[in-house]
Image (tube, rainbow, N blue to C red; front, side):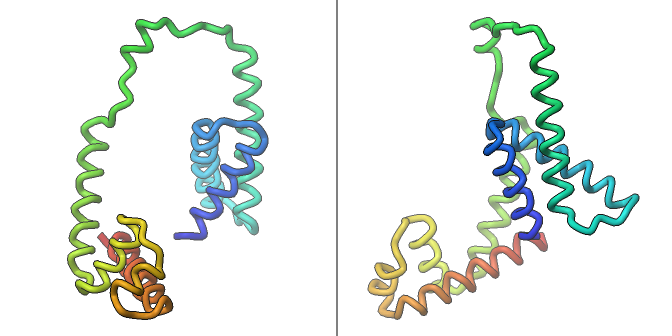
Length: 159
């Protein structure tokens, strides 16, 4: 799964480097990924990352061309106030479900491992600070965090 995320991040970085906004880059990469997925069902793709990036770049060129042809219409201030950026009901429910799954996974960690992970991820403590507070080595802290992250990742993927 992480290989796909790396591929998507790389494609987004290419688009941003070429001048696309972060929001446009995300949309373009998503569209490119959907097209790549459909294409791989019909044909063999040897280097999916290259196809993804080329497709995203082509989509970005098309987007720039479309925007040049569209007449500029300024957004009225009244219309801007009507736009609501808050999550819709479905997004809220999904977010709450993911939160509950994450809480369940955290509760399954050993207390010491949970303490160490939360100290680093939530409270921003360094490995050295945690090692001193827990009376263990920095290597031990790194291993505890690694195990915790691995467990949580596996847990979230299976739920």
